[in-house]
Length: 147
Ligand code: DQA
Image (cartoon, rainbow, N blue to C red; front, side):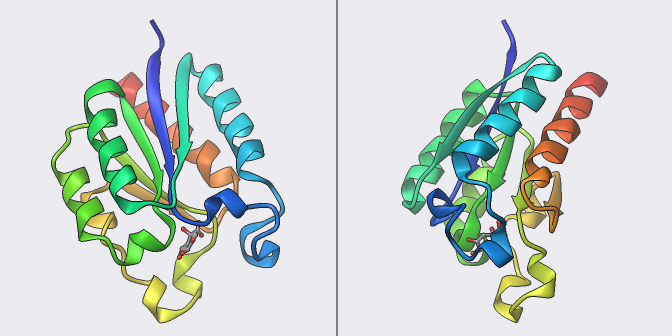
């Protein structure tokens, strides 16, 4: 059976395509899902792609992915900058998490410069738009190959 990657997306990412396109691009979340799934399949991996506006739901999904998935790609959106609960959920699981942001958060408002996720993530990819998800899939695939 193919190893599975969870791709978890936080608040307001359901609006991608029309939400602040100058910052986040014009691709919809379902187009990003297609892109990510194709890339994962090229590595023989399957994808469980989800989005929620609810912090606790993301916590539940991280806990589930900790049991059922080989890697996690997480764009926690605004919860990145606020959520100790997401930090703790990642710290509690062994599955590697890659933090992704479409925009370069360091080139934006100061309140986006701090992440509660980065210190418990394996790595961070930001500023490459939707391609960041593809890069994250490649990173997980190579980690799984090396392990
Ligand atoms: C984001 C960056 C966050 O600061 C912001 O709150 C988002 C999206 C990104 O993908 O660039 O909602 O995570």
